[in-house]
Image 1 (cartoon, helix red, strand yellow):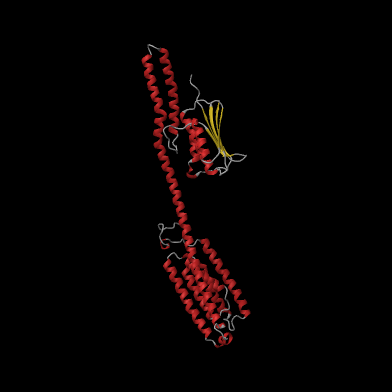
Image 2 (tube, rainbow, N blue to C red):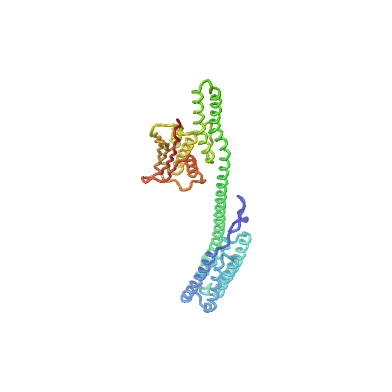
Length: 424
């Protein structure tokens, strides 16, 4: 059920607490029944102990104890009704000398507490509690006055001194009741405030989730804009080379056939590379980092490793095999995979983690591997773009990606991209 939250800094009057759930109402019903049973057993013990010289008869006692305990079954669904009923039963039990002094005090406290904790209209909650407490105070004053003027009480507690036993008895009753009602009022208000803060926190969390999803959608839209710049940077250069070589071949075709043949060979190689990079660029729709004056590639891995070490993660770079030319887009994608993997090491691997970056050149492939000695990264990184972006980049270049924890501890990211066959 949706809860409406007030703007930040407003009073609690602008927020409504959720109604009690079916489970909570069931707990209240069971609790009320249990208190009634305990009250019946308790009154029998008090009766045997002789707490009153002329206690109420059994049938009346059971009825008044039911009035004082059973309304708690609806204390969260109808808190004010329950409070009024319990208070009426409490006064009746005291006035008619029902021999039960424990459970009825508990039920009155719970009823007062529940009004403060569950009534969303704070003015109504304060008014209802103030009214019941005022009635209880008047009844208590009358009862104390009656006790103070009772000849038997005077004989029992009479003595000389500044503070007689009777006065001490009356003061004790007043202090106990003040603490009793103040505690019920304060704890009820604190419960309501805590529920409101919890609901506000949940609402803010939902807002952050929506904001994160919206940010992810905006990131995709921005990536679609960046793709135009990537197309220009990656393809326009090759197209320009093709145009220049074609013009040169046409110019020397008659006078220097060998030069024209070399120009046409260059056009063929450049065309193949252009088609491959164009295909890659059209399928690579995500680049979460701004590109500077030049796109970083695998030849920029030393700078990336150095930056990772300066950021606090000891990082080593190892190059295996004989370096061979890597297509520009494949080189960019491998660099981004290594960059994202090292970023995840800093975020998730722990303060004592170290990282190893390996760049391997094999027969027909190039591979980047990032391994760390820290903890495993989460299945779904914040924002949902980290590992998904790596997978899309590697897949767009026709490669494979391995991500997962290592058997000896830590986490491994390995991206392998095939290299195109050289054109003779």
